[in-house]
Amino acid sequence: MNDDSPGDNDEKRKKQKLKFFDLGEAFEEVKFNFNYGTGGDKAKSSAKMVGKTVLNVGILAAKIGAAAIERAPGELAKQAGQKLKENPGMTHEEREKYERIIEMNNKLKSKKRT
Image 1 (tube, one colour):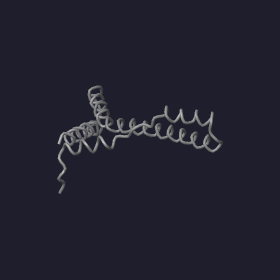
Image 2 (cartoon, helix red, strand yellow):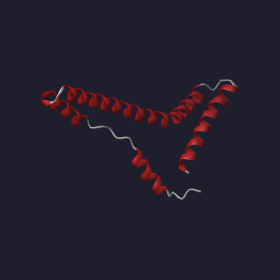
Image 3 (cartoon, one colour):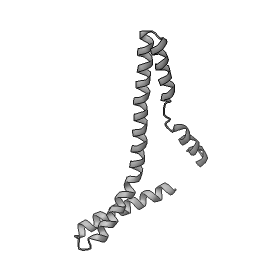
């Protein structure tokens, strides 16, 4: 049994949000090390900046992917509704297929509300 209240779930989501790395700080470190650091310092700070950049790209891709996945069922249902309106003479099987897509989207919506 789970004792979490709805407010607790909101707090968990806020903590789980992916945050981007500050590249300005990394750039300043690289700049400083290229002016005053040793060869090892230069390599280390450059690698850190490259790593932060790659992670930022990954975080952005994850955020975009999550948003796309979240919207996909609604978009499919919208397209299915348009197909039903545009093609009144479609076969019974085609009509059922599009109606199932719309029905599944409606079920997903109702699950999200509860």
